Amino acid sequence: MHVCYFGTYDRDYSRNRIIIEGLRENGVRVTECHVALWRGTKDKVDRVAGNWASPRFLVRALSRYARLLGKYGRVGAYDVMMVGYAGHLDMFPARILATMAGKPLVFDAYLSLYNTIVEDRQLVGRDSLKAKLVYWIERAACRMADMILLDTEQHIALFRRLYGLPADKFRRVWIGANDRIFRPLNPDRADDGSFKVLYFGKYVPLQGVQYIIEAAKLLEGHPDIRFELVGTGELKSDMQRLAAEMGVGNVVFTDWVPNQELPRRIAEADVCLGIFGTTDKARRVVPNKVYEALAMAKPVITGDSPAAREALVDGENALLCEMGNAQALAQAILLLKRDRALREKIAQGGYASFLQRFSPKAIGATVRGYLDELC
Image (cartoon, rainbow, N blue to C red; front, side, top):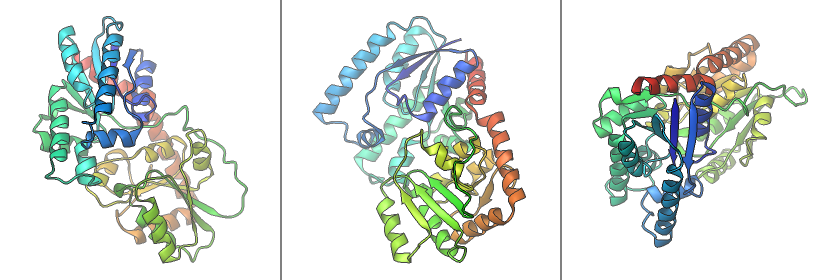
């Protein structure tokens, strides 16, 4: 099978790399027909949220799509066209090209841009023209696809409700983690008797970082428990201010570290944290950080949500606690600190789940099965 992986997707984004490498590990020939358009995630979000009409961006977009069409002319015969994440705008030329070639078109929507921009992060008003534009683009992109990939059944239910699409158009593909980067490592850490709790990720509403800080405050009576929060984002200054106002002394804020450094930080942790926010989106996702911790055989605590229940089993491959509840999170951390056997059971169960279901090879096998079915 030959797949034309098409678009202006972020080549370094883990979702795209995992699917591409996973397909290749399962004997699929993948030709990347790609041109870079976006200057990072912020640029992409800003443009999709409505700042696409600037003359400079339009000129840049037209030149990039002209180059993309030139590259497409050299791809040759293929069996399926896939549009990588986030390829909402790419779906318009992709639909024309796939139709002309008589080939099916798969859209890796991954998650909803409309929900992220309008409902979760509230970057634009729900009734604004920008919100309506984002909705129309996502709806049109989905309707043009022969098959749509999303990360959870909860997201599939959202897309069906938002855009009135049939269930048989969707397939679930886990996010997973890049096992070339995230794999079990021996911790390079002095045994100082401390118990390290690690959070890494963006400071956005669905993460629920405020509950981590509140849990840290509740655990100040255990001086050996230390928290490290790694990352950046729009709410970071708010969270630092909250920690200062509460007088939390067992939390260290660290700026984002490169992928080469992050595995070492994870290896040094005793427990890794997922998400604990109370937004609707938080209940629909299992974030990258959870899969990355599983890939490194680290015990994970994350919010008990419908999406988490799709991938995880409480007490077997993760510890699930009530979302938006700092007391529940603090109790879960204490439980794993005190029960080394449970901590090890969850770590090994999580790693076994990763190898079986969430590795690039396992995800590639799943996607290949969907493509075989489509063809």
